[in-house]
Structures are given as C-alpha cells and as structure tokens.
Image 1 (tube, rainbow, N blue to C red):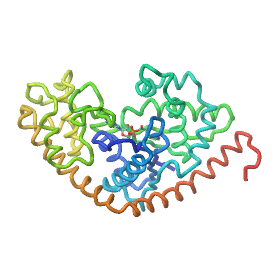
Image 2: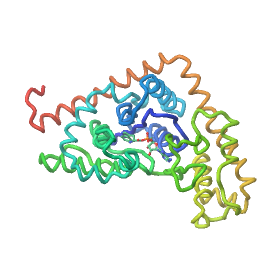
Image 3: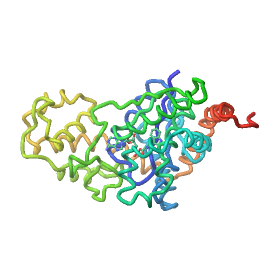
Image 4: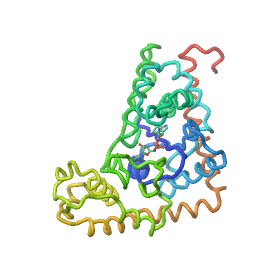
Amino acid sequence: TPRVFSGIQPSGNLHLGNYLGALKRFVEMQNEGIETVYCMVDLHAITVWQDPEELRRATRELCAGFIASGIDPKKSILFNQSQVPEHTQLAWIFNCVARMGWMQRMTQFKDKAGKNAQNASLGLFAYPALMAADILVYHATHVPVGEDQKQHLELTRDIAMKFNHDYGIDFFPITEPVIEGAATRVMSLRDGAKKMSKSDASDASRLNMTDDADTIARKIRKAKTDPDALPSEPKGLDDRPEARNLVNIYAALADQSVEAVLRESGGRQFSEFKPMLAELAVEKLSPISAEMSRLMQDTSEIDSILAQGAGRARAIAAPILRRTYEIAGMVGVT
Ligand code: TYM
C-alpha cells in the first residue's frame, strides 16, 4: 500500500519555493486519500547552528504553515522529528550501510559546507542517511519534494537496496520521488540562476509565507526580468531564466500549465504581467499567512497537534525499527 512521507526543515522562513515545490503537493496528496506522514525535521536543522529559542519558534511556525496551507492533522500525521527517536535509531544503522564515497558526492553537502569542509559538522555530512531513515522507518513509498532533493532520494534508494542486498531480505521499499508541477525549482527573484532559499542574505530574493500583501507586491514589482514581452510558447523562455521563473510561479499558483499561461499572456510586457502575478500571489498567499499568525497566537494547540502526531508516527515506526534490529542481529529485540 502506498504511503507518503516528506519533511521540511524548521530553519528560517518558509518561502514560496517550499510552498510550491513541497507543501502544496503535500496537501494534494493528503486529499487524494493516501496515507500521508509529514515531519518538521528539527534534527536536520541543527546540522548547522540554530539558536534554541529560535528553533522552537520556527518549528511551531512551520507546523502553523502546514496547517494554514491545508494539512489536516486528522487526515495527515504531523509531528517533529526529535519526538520519534526511531528516526535517529534507524539512521545509525544506515550510517553503517552508506559509504563515505556516496556521501562525498552529495552536492548539497558541498554547497552547505563551502570551502572549509573540515569545519562542517559531522551531522551535516551524515544528513542524507538520517533523511533516508526518516522515509524508510515508515516504509514510505512516495516522497514529494522539490528538485533540489532529488540526489538525496537517489541515495535513499541506494541505501534501501544495499541493506536489502547485504542482509539478503526484501525489507525496505525502493522509494519513488514525486517531483511534479510547474514549480519544482523556484528561483530567486533577484537572480534567475540561483534557487529561492531561506538562507539567501537578500530578503527581496524570496516571497516568505509570512509576508504581507504590500511586501509581496513590492518584491514582485522589483523582481529581476528582461526587457522583452512574454513569448506565446514555452520554448520562447529558453535562455530567459527570470522570465521563465515568473511564468512558472504564475502557472503553479493558478494551477495552470505553462502553455496555458503563455497562450493567455503571450505578448504582454512585464509592466502588465507583474501586477497580475502580484494579485494572484496575494490572493493565494495572504489567507495562509493570516492563518499562520492566528495559529501562532496560542501555540498550545500546535504543541498538542505535534504531540499527537508523534504518537501516531511512533506506532508505525517502532515495529519497523524492531524488525530492522532483528534483521541486523541485535539481541533482546521483543
Ligand atoms: P528543505 O527544508 O530545504 O525544503 C523543504 C521542501 O521545499 C523544497 N524546496 C523547493 N522547491 C522548489 N523550489 C525551491 N526554491 C525550493 N526550496 C526548497 C525542497 O525540495 C523540499 O521538498 N532534506 C530536506 C528535508 C528532509 C526531507 C526528509 C524531505 C529531511 N528528511 C525526508 C523528504 C523526505 C530539506 O532540506 O528540505
């Protein structure tokens, strides 16, 4: 039976890339009636320094973001990673399955560690093994993510295959990445060659889910573009990364194909298209940010949702971990 798992780091601001690349798909999959398990990966966040008070706030705000986007804690399991210890327990097993060479090839590690990799945390290096454990401790079959997580999901498959092969048992499923839609890679509003990210120093480079309507409109007005009108077909966006990005964002927000957007807006100048995009973005994002701030006024509701979610998650994860220990030869497994 299919089971969906995905996670988001509670580090910094939830932004439009997270929403279009991940959250929006999470909601769609939930509403298709598949079993869905969604996690705030606080243990992944601390692979780089997080102020404890800020981490607590960001974890709760992320949970508010899930709910405000349409995740229903009755339909989906919603919890934070640290409260289900089976993730880290399985991660240790996977640390012993994964090879140094596999980890060294991870482009996200190379990007995040920067030039001085010797000074990166050991956790940052091992990060993808914990991510594989997040997924496989639920025997999840489908993982919706943005394009930037593709390599980590390939590693997850490699770990599952090596475990199954080494122990001679068909135990972990080979997970399918779900990377779909018009906005699997939302780019910076200031630079069409960089992806939109929480860590970009320029706040104008991203739309945060907590931005108000004026801020959204201003950031879109100032977004980098080229001087040409929009083409009427997608191939006219080749070599126009900024234009393509804004069209992709429009398409994803409007639930239209890029073709349909260009059929409608081909020939328009950005002076006309940007206000349309701003209006659409405000229409779709403002209710989410309003609901997020409402939920953040009393965090006890959020905390109880996370606690209940952790209980439900553990009920699935614990037997799978026990079975893994048994397969690996640990004595005392009951
Ligand atoms: P994170 O927290 O960086 O991002 C959360 C989700 O948002 C997607 N995303 C984007 N999609 C499109 N355009 C963008 N500019 C953009 N930026 C981010 C990401 O692809 C992701 O889906 N390692 C993961 C968290 C994680 C996880 C997991 C995911 C931990 N364990 C298990 C899936 C399954 C991460 O750092 O995502």
